[in-house]
Length: 229
Image 1 (cartoon, rainbow, N blue to C red):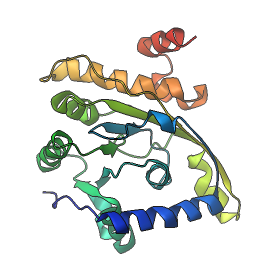
Image 2 (image 1 turned 60 degrees about the vertical axis):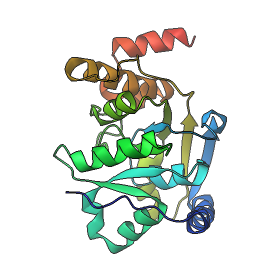
Image 3 (image 1 turned 45 degrees about the horizontal axis):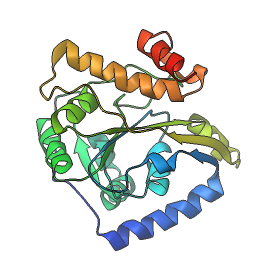
Image 4 (image 1 turned 120 degrees about the vertical axis):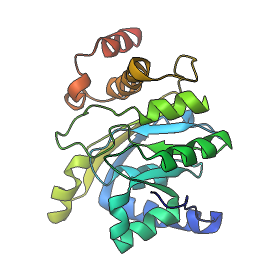
């Protein structure tokens, strides 16, 4: 069972953004593109690939709307990460099970106009490239009927190694154009899997080839890449 949704007031949120903006400037060499694609208002679901712990704070720094993000409930055991996540805005999700409480909370927030963010893979990739996406993002976008904003990030997987050597880490973050899944509203089973592939291939199309992982040969990715040439 997950706890209630945690959201900070605007002053605390913006103060934390300023702090992490300074920290990111010290630790990272950042290349950021496509911020103009983030909607200025209204609900949307932001999805991102997940290579390290760096992506959530990086998105937090650069994405202006105050969002609520998903985080695995294991991070509640660490006082610092729990405080940080709950300061930014979080729904704790029980990993390895269908967390219906988290799903209901998320749908309620999206339908009330709250932007949300999550990593469709559900966990950090240990391969350094995309792993198979889970259906949660597709389910929420379909049921709430909201646009999806894809974010591709790479270079963050080298952060832990670089920080030990006191080196700044070059990272790239690209925000893609919002898109919508085919209208349905009650997708499940194979349709939900197909929608998940659409989301993951949007991310793959924005990533360099070596980061596309299990979606590198997906026919939907080939279609997207061809359409963009």
